[in-house]
Image (cartoon, rainbow, N blue to C red; front, side, top):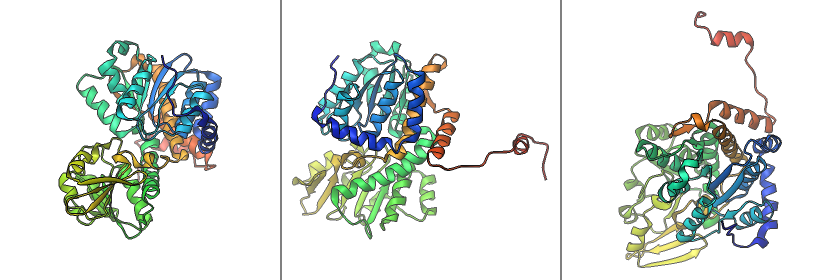
Length: 419
């Protein structure tokens, strides 16, 4: 098997310094790594991971490696790789890595196939591209796979669809469903890092802008919170009545996208669905509108339709493609429609990814211990793991909480006492 494919190994030292900086904000993963290094619960387990190649991911890979695993890493998005981190993983952490920022689609899947040549017993995925390629092209490897973990909402949707069709060949732990993941990673991580990506790419002032958010799941909630905090007038579009009602009760304007496009200045999609912003939306957008995506795949914005509509396309800033329409209006697409928080910024803060990757590590340990008793379907992270991660995070933040007395425990477990 090919050992690695990264941009430049000479970048490794800079990557090491940034990985160590991130590690200081990841106390939960650090505690897990210390235990893994002593107990080696993953001894000899071959893991192929398809994740965003960032400083936080590097700390997860090192945790698994020190726990005894044989790890190979490939990128889960062509624009999310931090090249200095990829170089450090190869040259200083001795973890085979296949990732180059800006790689084309052919190279992206070449790297995924290189990771699968590792003949994994466990998969770690961020969007399910690794698992879907494994099922389509490497079916001879499926019998040896114990199971996998999945990081994202988009990936969990795809895997549940596979399980419903009877196509999923092994159990998968939905890390995304853990409370310590989606409450914090999706809400606080996506909220802050998406704003960071938009501002880095454009340097526009958010105060006073009409900021349109498509989708009010945990990512949309976090983004709305942060955009309002920056002084934007937040507008939410939804297809589900429940989150739409919640957005109204949270104080945001809610309307169809057909109406929002006429007044919006900045648009961000966080739905996990296709063509949320479509041709007819572009036809009615204001001149100068900024359009970005923070969902996993770049299909949420119908860029091919915009390409057909435009008379000219030009790169006006790094990560800002400007499309001029026949009537002279100019629309700006950020980061090629890919995850803007990773395309033009650095993704979620390490403190948030600490909990997400703690779920990955402990979920994987649980899978290796219990895979023989699991069915071929998608499982949530066990509640006791979620609670332990929350406990460790609070301890790392020097926050103490109360504990129930024996009297209180007895009261809560009894039906006999009342008023």
